[in-house]
Amino acid sequence: MGKTPMGAVELADASKKLRALTGGDFPCLFRLFGGFKAHRRGTTNRERMESGLSATGENAANPTPAQDLIELACDRERVAFIFNPASGQANATQREAQIQALLQRAGLRCGLTETTLERGAGPLAQEAVRDQVERVIVSGGDGSVMEAAGALVGTGVALGIVPGGTGNLFALNLAIPTDLEGAVRLALTGQPTAIDVGRCNDTPFVLMAGMGWDARMIRDADRQLKNRLGVLAYFWAALRNLAQPSTAYRIRIDGRRLRRRAKTVIVANLGRITGGLQAIPDTHPRDGYLEVAILRAESLIDFAGLLWSAIRGKMREDRRLEVIRGREITITTARPQPLQLDGNEAGETNRAEIRVVQRALHVVLPSG
Image (cartoon, rainbow, N blue to C red; front, side):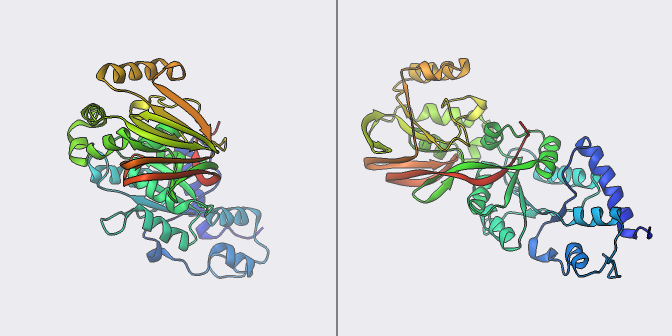
């Protein structure tokens, strides 16, 4: 048997460290990329092996089994790490240092690519796709995750999530750990799962789209308020907008036509809201359906009653909420209403055309 190349020793050490970090269960080692174009490779180890060269350029037509395994593992998956320093209430410098420390503990190097006002998570994720990255990890709030998810829909590139925002609705709905170490471990080592997404006026969403009251709540819970109150900012904004009158909605669900006067209409792929409450029952990200929730809450008493139903898991029985399942939904109003997608403002409209796209996004999720 030939001598083990020097690179194999380093990778073997990294493998041991990654096993220590992940409890011994990981699918492969990762070649990590951040600042994608700055880290382009020339010939990869896999390409060298196919052409009969070793990682150092020497002939390796008959590599040892250990060498073959290590080199294939090294190049099996390319990863980009996007970091939003403006999200959440925690110190961004400290959060970034903690992530880097976790990666270093695993014996891996990764430059975090930071979002800016000019280049958000969406454009960075698109750039990663062009660079043939296979897994994009985002550390930021729901806005950053939504942007990246929209760029990755239909590409086959997996999305890993390291929650770093205020609400972290993606993590709550998809059972992703909210502690930093657990989230990084999952993002690096978990297996991608294909889930459904919705499209609203041709813009993708993963969690939900809403018109009316809930979109006003999202609009009024701005960054300044969230910095002061945290998740309570959403409840404050919800109460503030209760005085707004209900709206007449015309709704079509798979050809069925409805007229409803309601505070808000939400079309959900996943139904947990701030605080982890299951506000919309029976949602599942892989069933090929969306749940249309028509909400009637005219007073503070109604709002408190809905919260109590959600806390007790009794939303199906609450008369103030009507839920209908469908695949193609159109919602129209006489006057433009505010619209939100995945907890982010999406302007105003008097017509929302929504449909489900099955298994269109690959997300790294916990097993089981």
